[in-house]
Length: 335
Ligand SMILES: [Zn+2]
Image (cartoon, rainbow, N blue to C red; front, side):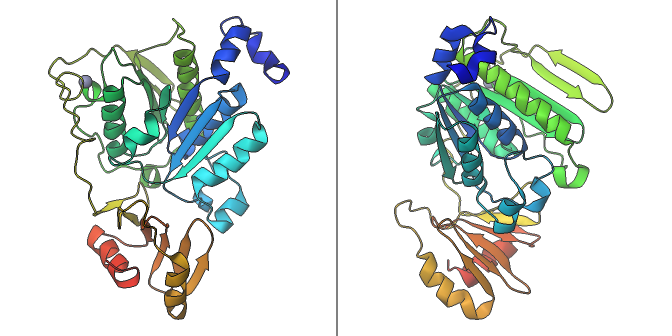
């Protein structure tokens, strides 16, 4: 218990609370700016099990705010979930950390969250949040929303007996702005990620001090606000139990990745039938530069650049549209 002395002596947690945290399980969807901050804090705080789910790999522009990565991770293009887990194990070897390199989607959402006590939203897009909202409401799980853009951040804990994310935002709010176009301050992502981690701790400890309001703040223009959100009885999700994002049929389409000229192509969805990356690497070798490791294949030529994961999912870089990404996939990887 010694390593947690500064925390268990805090009267709202105590030795008993520390034991509760050791038995607690948290899933973090997205190991980006918010996810790395909350993961580091929950690992340090002694939460016994952390599952990190992320579909992407580390790039140099991540290092400004994604606190668990370094330049070597960006050079190697390590999967974020794996690089984050390696770093977290150095912070705390006494807890269990499970990295999952995958897209959080309707096919795996229930499996990845059904055995945890709380889920933290470290995603960067509306689709993931509406899906998270559906799956958590269905399973009766609390989840902690976080968002950050420019100097403006927001956070809210969604409890199974209160309003849901769709009561707050009935439709996606994305006005086409992203971290790539308007930027994001690392002090802001630090604050939002920390607030999410604090909320998660209060939820795990059933603390009466949990703030269930929608909190927003602009750390540059010095505005802080909190509003009560009431449940919408006509809400499709929590009012009618219609989990349309969770029940959506799987799509093989390409989706744009937040703030990058990159698209994710879902590819084949047969989980147990992985692509033979070694064989494909031999085929691609004459066409460009191929790098292969146990997690992925990276291909680069003058005009085409993509990263392919064993489950058939690919991130196609430097393309401006979904059809362009799908045609790269068909030509180089196979339909
Ligand atoms: Zn609702």
